[in-house]
Length: 408
Image (cartoon, rainbow, N blue to C red; front, side, top):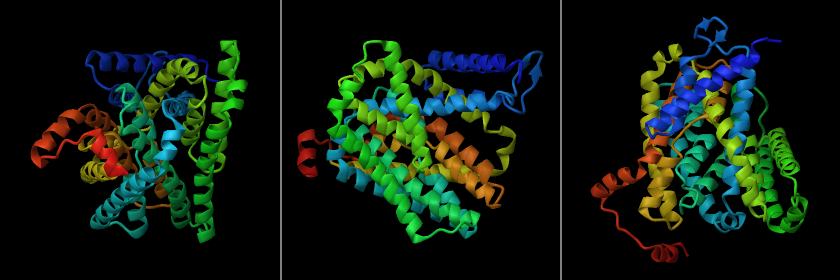
């Protein structure tokens, strides 16, 4: 066992603290600073005395802390919403999610094809470009206090819709790239499991609230938080075993607990863990990127970034308007879910495991890095961007009542 493991983790936390202090001083999102600081250190960094900035021996525990951070981010986001609202918005979510996937996936296919990649590489790149980062989106929504915004409900729905698509897509692409047998039955099974799993949680939230209230009626804060965390980690872990992302499992559990009378108590207890472990996730993400390998994929990544921003904005506008939201709220959708992250890296890793073009790894890393930095910035400045674009397109300002009539 590494005698300096605790010191390595402590060093990582000091670096995370510095990133947080700088971000706070500049009044900017902490996410880009955490990723960049993570990139600066890592395997290519020096060892200075007892301070090991490579974080090789402690990488596994830092990465695990990061995974916990994603769970808390999505769990908290689920607590902020009502299952009833999401169920009532089922049609809008299905339409909005389909529009989002169709536009982004199509642009990814066209872009990769024009860049001269093979069929399998085209499918990998399209997958990388299509899926947004639920962790970054959740963090930005919470940091900017937008959980009560009218468009956030649809954003949450699109995140869950993406997970169904991802479960199916990973099943298909793994079979094609890695040579496993992929049947129509297998794909249908993936869709059924992912969709059925989500429906199960909605049913539990709507029918078992009384039982949950009794179960969670625990006076001791110590026992209460142990029970909550036990449920969170078990459900997240179980979700992974049936090929539903563990983060989505955490989100669904948060939605269930949001219906109970203990939701506010849970929120207050979760916030410190969400902030601590969430910061660790973005730092560990930066650690996984080697800046010296990114040069050969610069132009390819920049082109993908441009079409992603355009595609996301268009998809957000169309999906939002279809759901009866204003132009301003609709523009916020595309600008909020533009970030790419953990899921894009997963898709890229399948391509690398299948022996496809070596450029896929630096491309995905640089593409994700740029959008992980630009995403929070675009979300924060969404009001200014909307004002600028409204000056060009002259969108009409509609009252909520008018929009509700259109939606009905």
